Every structure is written in C-alpha cells, then in structure tokens.
Length: 73
Image 1 (cartoon, one colour):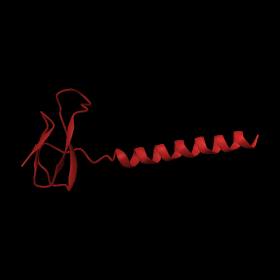
Image 2 (cartoon, one colour; image 1 turned 180 degrees about the vertical axis):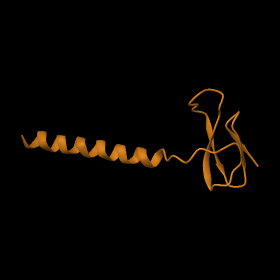
Image 3 (spheres, one colour; image 1 turned 90 degrees about the vertical axis):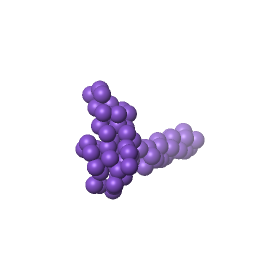
Image 4 (cartoon, one colour; image 1 turned 120 degrees about the vertical axis):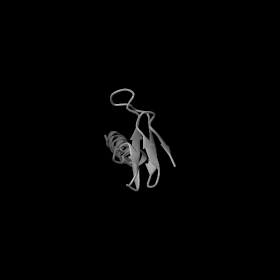
C-alpha cells in the first residue's frame, strides 16, 4: 500500500512539473501588425493560411512582413 502511494505521488509530481515547464518553454508574445514593430517583442505570423503556425519573433526597430511571417531590419 505504501509503495502504491509513493508511486502515485511521484507520478503526480512529474505531471505537475511537465505542465509548468511547458508554460515557460512556449512563452507567447502578442501578434505583430504588419510594418514597423514598436513593441519590445512580438510574433510575426504569416497570413498565407488561416491560423498559420509559421511565425518569427520580431523586436523593436524591425519590420514584420505578414505575407511571409518574417522580420527584417
């Protein structure tokens, strides 16, 4: 009975740690509008398909091309 309880507690601890690390690993930033970027960091998404998964992180001073989802200086 004790072994089962210990295994159950360990399994739940591992699941909780996995969820927490996923939140840090996949941090989301606001979506860029087309053109010059004024925010510190944003996601420049390609508009080729609805809900496109292709994007790059753009930083202030760069320009977001919403057709390709790429940033340029």
